[in-house]
Amino acid sequence: MSYKKNAEGLFIGKTVTYRGVTYPSVVALARAYGLKRDTCWRRYLKGLPLDMPFHTKGAVTYDGKTYASMIALAVAFGISPQLCSARLIRGIPLDRPVRSGGCKPCEYGGERYESIADFARRLGLNIGSARLLIETSGRWL
Image (cartoon, rainbow, N blue to C red; front, side, top):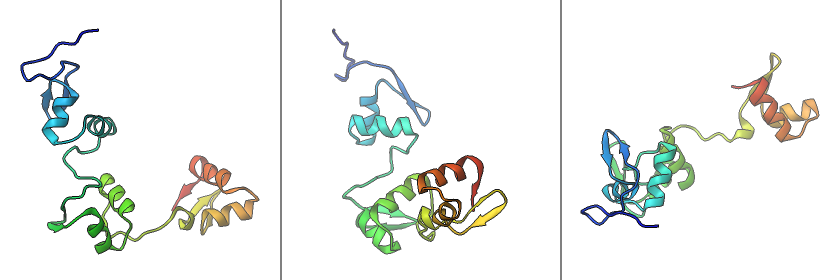
């Protein structure tokens, strides 16, 4: 199978449009943002910003202040680097209180439960079944 190359020596593939700019290929888009092709494509498919540094070893700017790294940013807000990155990706403020899924109150059948564990225990279910029941027929508070 042969592939054609453009004037820049890039393989010609399907064009990719990102933020109103059309690139001749994913490789060209990746080069424009300084990313590896696979990283660029994964972020593009998930709708994640290509210009935001995730898990990088460089400086990270958040809310107008520059931090030496993602770890330094996480430490400043008292959260793990993984949670910090996940919140940045989803646009969730870093100063929001940390709550694990097991501590979130829920409601089912008009009755409130303090946690998924409380709900599961009172209905005689395992955690997985209780979570599925809340997500399909109840609600998280």
